[in-house]
Amino acid sequence: MTRGNQREKDRERAAARNGGKSKTKDDGLTPEQRRERDAKALQEKAAKKAASGGSEAASGKTKK
Image 1 (cartoon, rainbow, N blue to C red):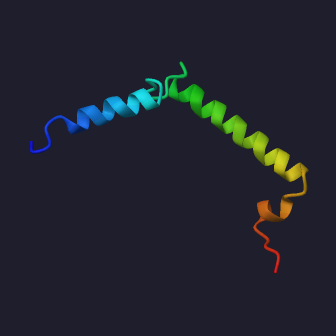
Image 2 (cartoon, helix red, strand yellow; image 1 turned 90 degrees about the vertical axis):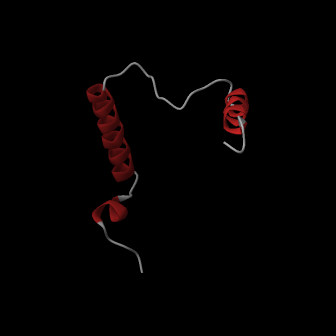
C-alpha cells in the first residue's frame, strides 16, 4: 500500500464527526416488521395526499 493507513485514519475521523454512529440500521425490527411498518406509512401518506386534493397526481393526470 502506497498510502499507508490513510483509509483507516479517514474512517476514524468520519466516525468522530458522526458521533460514532454506524451505517447500519438497528431499530430492533425484523425485515417483515419493517416491511409492514413501511407499507402502513406509505398507505397513510397516499390517503393524506388523496384527501388534500392531490388526486390528479395520484391518477396520473397532468396539468398542461
